[in-house]
Amino acid sequence: MDIRSMPPDNGESSQAGAPVERLKLTPDDEQNRRLIDNVRPPGWVNPRPDGRYNLVVIGGGTAGLVAAAGAAGLGAKVALIERHLMGGDCLNVGCVPSKAVIRSARVAAEKREDERFGIRPGGPVEVDFPAVMQRMRGIRAAISPNDSARRFATHYGVDVYFGQARFTGRATVEVKGTELQFARAVIASGARPAVPEVPGLAGAGFLTNESVFNLTVLPPRLAVIGGGPIGCELAQAFARLGSEVTIVERGEQFLAREDRDAASVLRAAMERDGVRVRLATVLERVEIDDDAKVLHLKGEPGIDTFTADKILVGTGRAPNVEGLGLEAAGVRYGPDGVQVDDYLRTSNPRVFAAGDVCLPYRFTHTADAAARVVVQNAFFRLAGRRRVSRLTIPWCTYTDPEVAHVGLNERMAERRGVAIDTYTVPLSEVDRAVAEGEEGGFLKVHTRKGGDRILGATLVSRHAGETISELTLAMVAGVRLGRLAGVIHPYPTQAEAIRKVADAYNRTRLTPRTACLLKAYFALIR
Image (cartoon, rainbow, N blue to C red; front, side, top):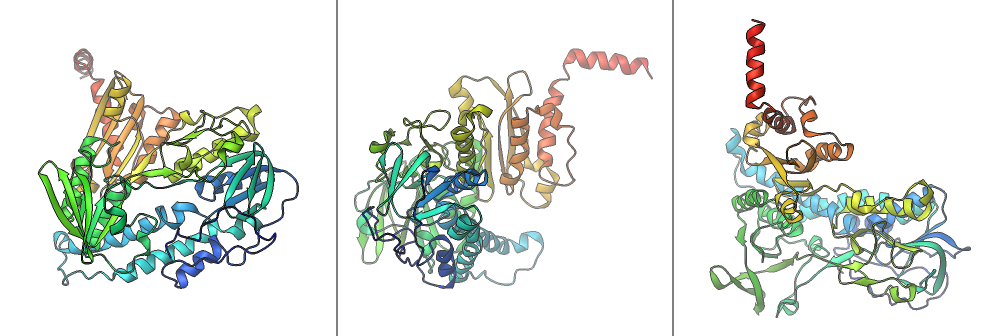
């Protein structure tokens, strides 16, 4: 059974106090049973509500868990309703499993480069794909107690319900035939893979992030549709693990929201790993030939075909708004999800939303931050309401090299009519990157034209996701680029690129007139 393909829950009544249905995952092994014991415990009995809740949370992913824990930790009476698995996509089919697989793939890639670092190779690299996936499942199971139903029930005092939530009024929601009353609610139902309508695709069968981590056999030939973060990360990882990978992206670059130079570096890295790249290309139809899938493409070279054993679709996300009874609650929604204002309040002032169901930036850390905004705005308005538009949100695509971003890039600034100055340091000028053979990336920092207020940055390096936080902190704290030149970094580290880019800004302050004055000054004190 797919990790998300539990029997459909139509929200109909069931016997009060009856345990929720048992769920098995594929493969049904020790690691997945440990996971289920935490995130959807067999025999779990939904509680009986005792009066009105301060907060009802719909969805047990990152946004829902943070909102529930935050409100309950402050003394609120909280109910949490989860239809599938506690932990949501991040734990079960997103961040955690993908990063575990990416780590194994990186080890395989590094072993193939032994000779470049003066190490005599010990023969061809052999990847034990079942062991890679077993390790991933073990890591997922080991992390799952943090998001477990028992932890939220016993540690936080949250009433945890499993089943489909459905609003029955502006201040009531039903789950498994039980009605819950609330003073406030937050919709945190997340999103799911958006699947393009391509003739023959459904009949041929395909993987998404919700099913790819169930694999126990490495696909010899893998087609990846979509060059966003999911597509790029998994295309590179599976190529490094031994699949023959072709990635198809309809746009002219990977990672459409990113810096063009960053996308170019990533393309070169993926091609070095053996990924066949098809940009500005559309998948027109899929046919079945015996057990293989024949993909028909239309792109710059014209129309051609290639054959794959598996197809992985990574073409975006669609918000989960179906079946929630949003009309009964007076909550407006559309194709982009639940409609919210800058305070994350819906058209029903009792109901808020957070995470992928309502935000354009669908990242775990954004969902976490949004949930904190909801708790503040729902219960502590007198202390000041928080605006989601004022959040400074970094993100990172965990390819090799990683592509990390915060604030504006050049195209964003141009679209918004913001004049900027850009300071760039290639990693070939950073000693640690050169020593580690990772000099292909760069750091770009954008400031307001004529000044050093940081408006954004893009970093392409193996550890970009870790390093970008220094620039995010500077933006949040209002620390200007010139001052970062005075921050002492351990030598040698790749973070030294930040000091170098700050030095580049400070050198612009040495105008010809200033240079003449300094020359005269030093002449006087000789």
